[in-house]
Length: 140
Image 1 (spheres, rainbow, N blue to C red):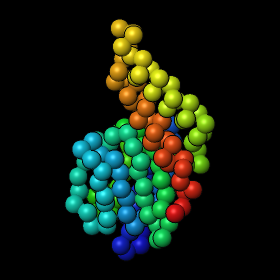
Image 2: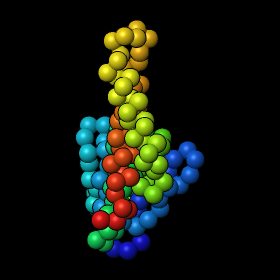
Image 3: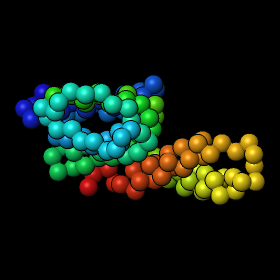
């Protein structure tokens, strides 16, 4: 590994999504967004639904992360995500449809006693995260 770099591993139950040497990582922690640079103090945290980004030189890359855990060490960040998708893997039309379905369900929720607000809110967060990542070109 090169001096002043972090190894980033993003793994889901289905596959290893990213394995790269990076300059920095920013991720959606349960208590807010956090960043990690080389020589960071080790810690473990739960991930929230949101956008993870990492920088390699002047390029910034984006991944939609849906739950899981992050283990941060001085020279490595491991993301164990329930689901993770890169911008090029996201079907934006499908994400827009999911966002609209979730909004409709949430706005009409008072009419249905069996409505699960938490589930609809999670679906909305997932769709928004996917759309934010899909709007990125992969490198900015």
